[in-house]
Length: 274
Image (cartoon, rainbow, N blue to C red; front, side, top):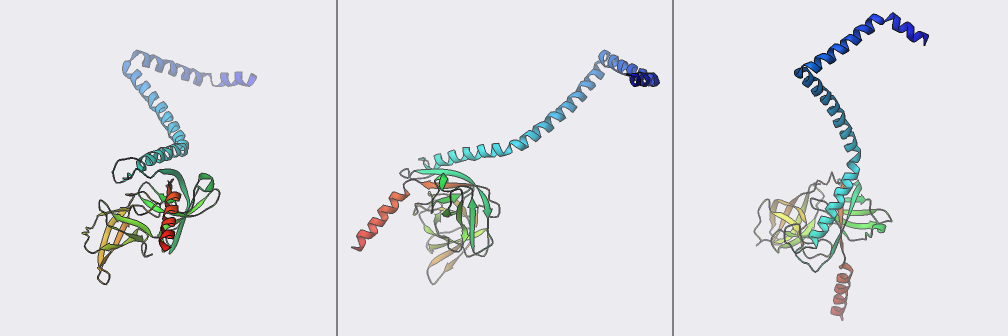
């Protein structure tokens, strides 16, 4: 206490000056609207900046929650689209097949090998099985090959063994989608007859000859094509919609009737052999 008193006595002139200056500023601001406006505007600018910074920090930490919610909303929307009667490019034309969509995320990706695989954070506990199709918001990604309790590995479309039914959009001209291992952003569509009219930029989508993918899932666009004269079929380079080097969120397509379809096909083949 004695030190405080000594401090006040020692700096009494300076402290008196500060006090008088504060009083004079207060009186000036109070008596002049211009100064009052400037004062409050400055105050609002400071507090507004603090609030904005606080909001930005809070929003940053909320991103994970918001992204999860967005992914869940997209999953519900896609599930509706694949089971709807509408015929837009992303929708399913046939209503007799029921699809479920399961969202997930990529935890490991490869695209520079001849046999590329992608690992996702969903597995058997999420009802994932072998031969389920996997897509992104831009197009197809691949097909599930193996599953563990919590994870699944996907055979990427960038795999030498990949073979997916595909067609030219708005036509019934089907072929097989393969990869020649040369470019990570380009795959090949083969077995399209020479009589089919083709144009650079035509869209390639999934076909209807598979129980793995719904029809009309986007794949890419025709980059170039040439005719294999010995077989009378086109070899078509397809520029992928997906950036295969930057994949995060994915959707697994579950065909609820696939087992029944496969059993029927197996029975049909068995009967034909007798």
